Amino acid sequence: MQPIRTRLPFGNTCAVAAAPTAGSRARMCRAVAFALAGIMLAIVAAMGAFAQQAYAVADDAAMQLLGESYYTQDAASGTVYVIRGDSGLYEVSLDVGDRQVDGDVTAVSSNPAVATVAVRSPWWYSTSASLVITACAVGTTTISYQAPCDDGTVVSGTLNVRVFDIDLGKRSFTGFNYVLYPGLTATPKVSGLPKGTWKSSNTAVAKVSARGKISYKGLGACEVRGTFGPVDVVIPVDCTYKKAYKAVKNGFADANAKITYSQAKRMAKNYRDCSSFVSRCFWDTSLKRKIFALGGTSAKSWALPAADQAKWLNGQKKCVAKKGVPASRLLAGDTVYTQTNYAGVNKRYRNIDHATLYVGAGMVLSTGGGKKHDIYLRNYPEDPTGTYVKFIGRPCAEPALNVTRATLTKKKGANHTIQLKMQWAKGKVKWSSSNKKVAKVNSKGKVTAKKKGTAKISAKVGGKTYKCKITVK
Image 1 (cartoon, rainbow, N blue to C red):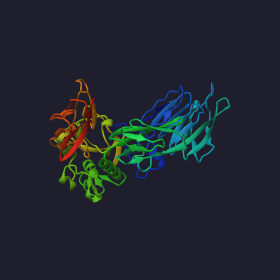
Image 2 (image 1 turned 90 degrees about the horizontal axis):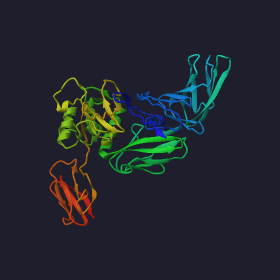
Image 3 (image 1 turned 90 degrees about the vertical axis):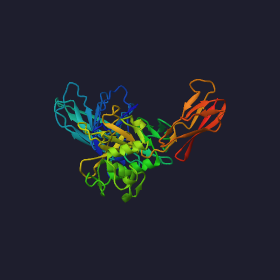
Image 4 (image 1 turned 120 degrees about the vertical axis):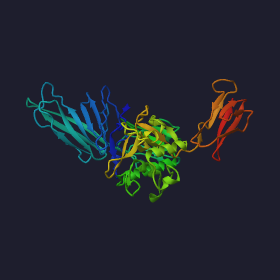
């Protein structure tokens, strides 16, 4: 089974719903698999409320879906599975042989409480009809349709529909992904589907129990997949620092508030421009936010412009990259600075003129436009050339060694040495070994094996000590 993975194409935007329903919370997270043997499917991006739309054509199943919907068909039973809350346009191919449709097609649902159906009249003398099916509640129903033909006969057929739901709950800010920090867990609620199994794509980042409970294991991003009969569910999971999680949470709180874009009123209540939005996600005393001041003490009362934020972060050794990198390298809570005015040079740091907040799952929160609810989700542009993305910062980065344990060999070769590095640390690092006879370390953090045994390599910086266990065989 191959899941459909929903992503917003760069340049498209979507508003963040102030009070999403259980069905709408889950729409964009669910990548639903097509289990149609021998059927060709084509997916095109472009949803309704989320500026993306899924489009699929299934020749043998004689069905086509347009709109903000996800479905899969069980090849054995022919049952179509649809997510609750969705309304999709299904193209039903009519087996009329040499005849053609000549009149109005009718359709009825056996259980309208589960799903309703309406007919979008086809062109006369066509061989298909469009059924608009709206999934209302978890359950099953049968759609029956009839089409009059030009020879006076009537062609009829049925479509079995099962409506299911997946609710990511309040732990999901977007309704389609999770952001976790150490100690925080999340469990999606699945209903209307057979008992399934769960699996993490990277257990070093997040693990998932047999019942679907997702837990933080380490920094990074992965996907948690649930398989429920013919339906596959793929949930992006981003694991980050607790402080970064709080910044992301603040970003969505602003997105769900009546925030208006304004440079003149950027520090006033319910107003933001791009740089003050990012800055105030981390520090805003009026909202009791005291995570990290992007720019030091002065930035606690007045947000720095986007270019100055990037320049300051670079000086603090909190730079992830100075161009676009794959989303897999980012953590939720990172800040992304871009140049949107390609025609001119603003003479500021790296010509930066815009700031956004990365919130995981390949998405950023951005602002602009001068209207209420002016903070919205959009796709993060990887931009490896650096034409658009000029700087990526990690304000909440915590100093750490690149390796915390390693095994070396006494014999010279590929595993005879290892290079240790302090990440996100400002200042000179002092290196030492607890047992120089087993492993020694030089002033630059290069460790060399000497004889069998264990030793702890210490890196002291900023008044704190970080250790790596070395085992020599």
